[in-house]
Amino acid sequence: MALRGVWCVLLTCLFYTSSADKDFFTSIGQMTDLLYTEKDLVTSLKDYIRAEESKLEQVKKWAQKLDVLSATAIQDPEGFLGHPVNAFKLMKRLNTEWGELESLVLKDVSDGFISNLTIQRQYFPNDDDQTGAAKALMRLQDTYRLDTQTISTGELPGTNTDVTMSPMTVEDCFELGKIAYSDADYYHTELWMEQALKQLDGGEESTVDMVTILDYLSYSIYQQGELERALDYTKRLLKLDSAHQRANGNLKYFEYQLAKQKKVEVEEGLKEKEKREREKREASDKKGRPADYLPERRKYEQLCRGEGIKMTPRRQSRMFCRYSDNNRHPLYVLGPVKQEDEWDRPRIIRYHDVLSNSEIEKVKELAKPRLRRATVHDPQTGKLTTAHYRVSKSAWLTAYEDPVVDKINQRIEDITGLNVKTAEELQVANYGVGGQYEPHFDFGRKDEPDAFKELGTGNRIATWLIYMSDVPSGGATVFTDVGAAVWPKKGSAVFWYNLFASGEGDYSTRHAACPVLVGNKWVSNKWIHERGQEFRRRCTLDESD
Image (tube, rainbow, N blue to C red; front, side, top):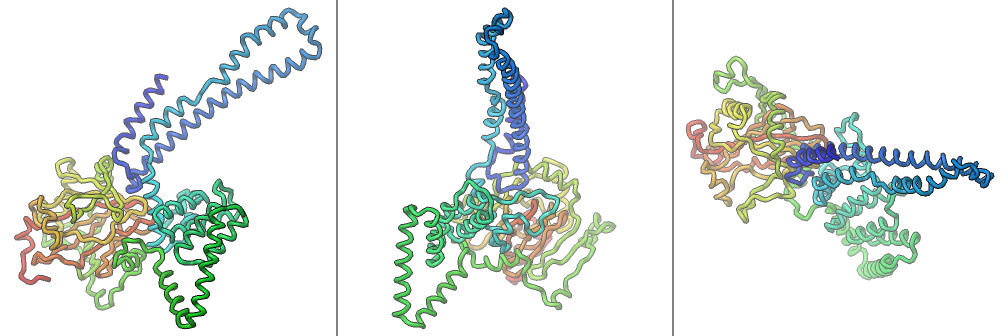
């Protein structure tokens, strides 16, 4: 018991820091802790099973011994009990040993497991995490145009064949459909209920019955205006459960609405029918788009899929790779940095091999205990708040807390030639399930005059973004206004100016972090401000210069 108590205390200490901030689904890095939590639980469960098996083995041996003894004794009861030792042992067994057996059977060996489970449960993901992860899957489904079968089997683009993946069950698909239904998202409800039904029809065993799935499916299809299909599924449901009250009501209603629709079509004639069909097709094309539809969402998602604008050969011919010493900077004369042009307008430059693996691991080690759900600036309230369009966790690292951070800051200054003393601290971000950051600007616009007022360092003049991991699939940084896409490459950094030399904002720098389809995306960034750059990047009078 003493050891168990120590073990419990250790567990509490171990998971305190990793669970200080929930929203597990927003950071793959922190979700890894949950795997170790589950592994410990499985070990504890196995200990419990062994204890139960040991107890049952003792009971089994006792039963076998008495079975043989009883079989012999009842052949000649008087002769058996005529022996005084047998008589004594019978008294002893019934008075003492059966009582001991009763105590053994009643003994609860689950205490250790239940205790450990209770301690760890407080650090488990909650309903918000499960809902967040489910919505992330649907976001990936839309962004990368994946069908439910592909997601259910786990055969995603970029998946490592060495990674074990258990396919989604009927229950999993049904749960996704229910979560979509609770948001009145009937498009995804239909898709996932259909997948659940398909797997049931394929012979998969499930605790979810077909009637329930058909009930959700018919209603979600009806809500999208497809009466005939809704009616077909309702009829199928009633074949399985003819007394289903809601389905019987729906059947009458759907049949009435269809008859009414056909009557109107006959009266209105061919032209009206064609118009109605066209409206149906247009409505069908819009299915699945979220309620907070972005004007550039289609373009954003195309870029995320690698369907971006291709440069003309003439423009491409002006893009170069070079070794840069930043105007003969003493540190880079003998060892220049590798510089690659990613885009021309706005000019986006990638610097290769700017961080070593050991530096990356150190930054991640410093950041991981402090990762918190990333926030955005709310222009209405002026406060920082979480948002569904930014799914990641971030931490801020100061130069004085570790030499590696100080070295990185100095390296940014040496390569860019800009003063980083007025820059914001190094921000480290880890993206979660389907982690993304939808299109946004890094600089404060004219309608946000107080965006960085409290810093007293002016607007964000430039952005330095370091990729600290490779991403097998998804996770690109895309610039929606110009059609550029920059793909993560571990150890490299991309740099661009958010402001023209005149101080005006460059609206072509509107960018986004695409959802991570497969992998674990780590980045760090430095937002460099205007103050301190007066003699490093001189102002001009031309607004767009």
